[in-house]
Every structure is written in structure tokens, then in C-alpha cells.
Length: 290
Image (cartoon, rainbow, N blue to C red):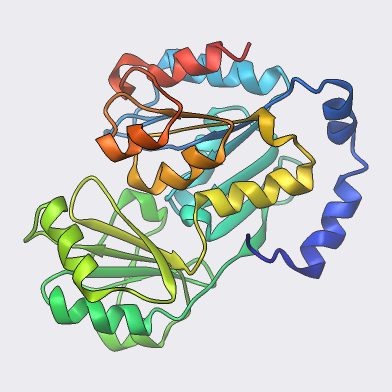
């Protein structure tokens, strides 16, 4: 579990006096609902269907603690939070590397309450040995994205700054991304396994895409830290996702649901499987909470 720090804890102690905690105590049936974004809330073109949006907004309106939990970075997460109508709540970004408190009364509408950093240099050195043609990008401690070869992706949420490899090596990261255009996801995964990355947590995506966070950090660690501080019963946790970076979160939840198009290892980690994203599988799960 991440160390949220004294400053966050002090702020949290103030927040625990809010009506939200009292509401949960009065209604023990309220759930903590942790939702992946790409392939779950939105399809792989980035579109959220009307059925999913309406069901998600209804769950928010019912008072459940809906937590967007994604590999996306902060800037690419905020539009999803807004679409769901969450005016007060939380989001876990960068596969657990960054946690936000959402509050529409704040100047920016949110504040970063936890940021887990790591030194990317050892991983970068090891990866370059076996994947010399891969593209690399990282999110630094200030929320900037630095990348090689003009590497851009919608999940960054900002335009990445082109830098040389040495600049990446010297940076402190909350998220490191590696993308290979020369390998399949399976070949890429095998290459990564052969080098044995140490001191970090990583997951391979649908394509030859690697997301790396600090050691021990995942979506599961981020949402568990929130659950403990929100004093939500572990039995009242729900998680829905479709990617390999969702496996720990699906296992963490009392009710873990894999999307229908998820890889077999993701489905195996879940308690149940819903319809694919194109069949509004998430909407079915959300409506079952109402």
C-alpha cells in the first residue's frame, strides 16, 4: 500500500468529518466501485456509449463511491471523471502512481493527494539492451511527459516533450511507457520477462506496450489505500476492467468483473465476466448496483 504521508493524512482527517462518511455509516450497502477506462468505460476508439454514461451517472447519483482507476495519466483521466458527473470523489491514475481528490469547489477541480515516484534508469538500461528500437516515454514528478522519437499517446493527457534517452535516464518518474512497433504483444512480453525488471511493477498491454510504475504500486494498491481511509467494508468493493494491469484490482475486489473481450488471464482473475465493451458490458454491471 502506498504511504500517503502526513500531509495527506491530516487533510483526510478533516474530510472524514464530512457528510459522505456519515452517509456510508447510515447506509452500509453503498459500494466502492472501481472502474478501468479504456476497454471498460470507453471503447478502444475512446467513445463512451450512452448506456454506460447513463448507468455510471446513476450509480454516482445513488451515492456509491465511484473511483476511476486507470493506466492513463492525470490529464487524460479528468475528462472521464467529468463525463461521469463526479463532483466530489477520487481517481487513481498512472496504474496507481497518482491519486486525485476530485472536488468541484477547488480552483482546478481536483488536487493530487499522492504521487509514487521511482528511478527509471535501471529499467531503461535493461530494456534498451533487448528492445533497442522501442519508443520510450515517462511522466515526471511535475506531470510533464518526456519522450523519445516524438512518441505521443492519448493516455498521456499532454503533448510529450521530445528529449534524448539520457534525459529520461536522469528523470524521476511516476510512469514509464515502452512501445515496440517490431513485436507482437506476446513477443514483447517474453522479451521483458527475459531481462527480469527489478524495483518496479510492470504490466504488458494489448499490443507491444509496457507500463511501469514504482515497486509495489498498482491500481489495486491505489484503490486499497482509498478504501481503508474511506472506511469502506472490503465486502462492499466492486472492480471492473479488461487489461492485464487490472488483474490485481479484480482480485482485490469482493466482486471483480472482467469485460468480455479481456484476455483469458484477466477473466481467470475475475469473479465473473460481463459482455464486451462494444456490448455495453459495464452498463449491465452498473445497473445491477441500483
